[in-house]
Length: 273
Ligand SMILES: C[S@@+](CC[C@H](N)C(=O)[O-])C[C@H]1O[C@@H](n2cnc3c(N)ncnc32)[C@H](O)[C@@H]1O
Image (cartoon, rainbow, N blue to C red; front, top):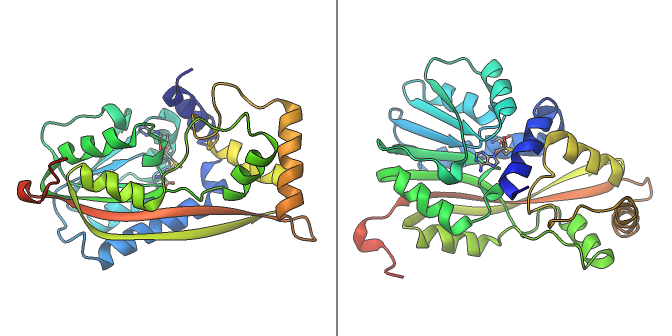
């Protein structure tokens, strides 16, 4: 199964319990909009907005409230996630699109592309930012939060220790590399920041269950073409607990998030490389 199919299937299964299991993603979506508004990246109330990986519609609902006169196009690869989102937001200015952001096209172009906790799921990060640049109108804005290198640091560190031969085939990007890709795709960065969030779970098994329940275990960020065996999983859990649990057995889970707003650069500003 290719990475996109595996990601889609996991989110199809995770749609029902996604909201109950992802308080950090909710906080990130709220902060993204606050940052974009603070940095004046969002200056107009009209226009066409594309939201990528809208999931259960947390950010979509906020966008419709803030921009009641805009046409909001909310896209996700998972039909089940979209069904939850549709039940949550019934504003008349939303169009729902089931599709893969890495192949999405639109001849009219958008004024804003907004996305929270979703763009990192696409394997080819260089191509996706070039595509987003083409999807925006001249002067259009990209406003994203995306998971970066230190996300699930404890899990990855434990995995490197006990299963160095079975690591995920792709890693999340460091913030500076992400900025480089965005600039090389033809954007001028207006605002960027990096922030860590931490969630505490009663134990590693509870953390892994919560990840599975919310659909966060698909694709090449979680594994290579082989899944972990039961024995390997037990070894991983034991190491995570040994290195990170507090005396009550609780474990931390770190998310490292990049927030970026950027504008389509004028031709003269573009890096010729
Ligand atoms: C972690 S959820 C984030 C959802 C929502 N934006 C939020 O902040 O809660 C990631 C979403 O991206 C969607 N997704 C993953 N890969 C995608 C792709 N290639 N094209 C479109 N949507 C994708 C998933 O189905 C899922 O709904």
